[in-house]
Image (tube, rainbow, N blue to C red; front, side, top):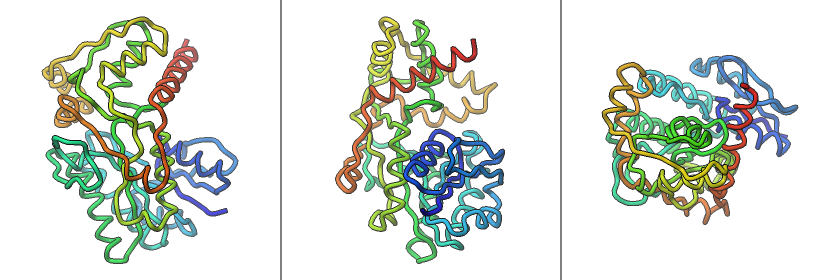
Length: 312
């Protein structure tokens, strides 16, 4: 079968590697420390993906190169440009399709559901970084220097996912305690299952008709933070969910000591008003449908409880 190279072994990279390996492909996972998922068809490689020459050597013979890595949140402006450049170089020199995991930051502040046709008008530093990653790859694609596609999801749900909800709400609800988060608790919000990100990446990377444009990952109807917390508590059997909104000043105070919290402040617009993604295009084009939110929550509950049990 064909060779696929996955850069990054976080939740998206791991799910993508497993999906490809289970389909019978050879998979090479590249991370700084050589870690990643265990599977007979997955080769784990320790390498710096910022090294374009090294990444090119590792991508030789591959049909697709998947960008599933992510620099530290507060280091995006410094670390994403060289990583993005190395990925494009490897794709140009080997002919592998560059399939990138993106997000919705590049659209900026909008007042309606986001589609793939929504203009890129970023209003934050990280939004400008994400938009430029796509624009650089698209320019190479349109010039015939490489073939590329990007998939974009909303906030992730799934085992091992790190987000404001999984850090601030999930463990507190599972413990039967009150959770607090800086958000409008009742604003509709889109939540994307991480396994659906992997399915979409693999699908569009292998379909020539998908290249040269972004695709939104199939995502269930939006749920507010409060509704998601209530459903989490119901499925976990931990009693009524208790969740309250923290003022933004709490995030600013946390940012004095935590660079990751400080980096979240500019993204506050995504949680203090409706933040909704339309993913109907991918469903129409490829027949992909979203995993139900309940299934994602069940997975998160099981993983959290397994981790708690192992720690104990």
